Image (cartoon, rainbow, N blue to C red; front, top):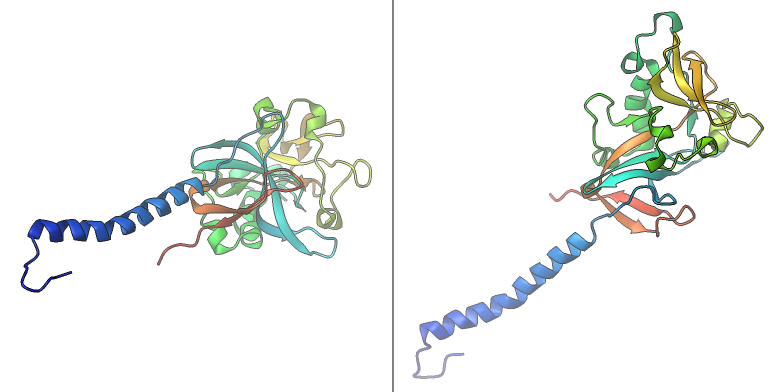
Length: 249
């Protein structure tokens, strides 16, 4: 305020300007702290899994889509390695068994990077997937993954995997209807024209790449800096619902 006949001191004006800017500065600090605290924090297997949902895929018998439920196998600042909790689909690894050239040249690897990726994730969700230099943005677990105790695979029974109604409608094999089913891994077998796969007792064996009734249990690498948690606690019955963070324009 300027009082008639009195010229305000320059220092006084400086401090008044600072006083006006202080609330704005404090608001910015608060927004920054909220942004940091809102960053998704995930943890790997610790006597139990943390569960999240991200993307969606047909899961009902008639093809009804539902959010994909993932187990957090491992996490570190900024990224997490996730495994689908349920068998989502059924595909052979490759149709040319005798001339099979390996996983990166397989039909299934190509399908995961294209058809599955587009069916399961929006463009915004795809942008939150990290790309492995060799394996792309979606793959299958390796044989070592499903033997890794740090990922929760502590015995044969821990490798019992269960399909969705949609997977059964696509021809998923089950050892007993509604019970666990075999899955392919991305690991090629030492046996010719075969991949490592799970068996009836949860052990890991091998099955020919042309077999077309084994389940697919995808894995993804998620950029935690590009997603936010909308709801949930991380339990299987109450998973963390993750959504991509909208890009600032």
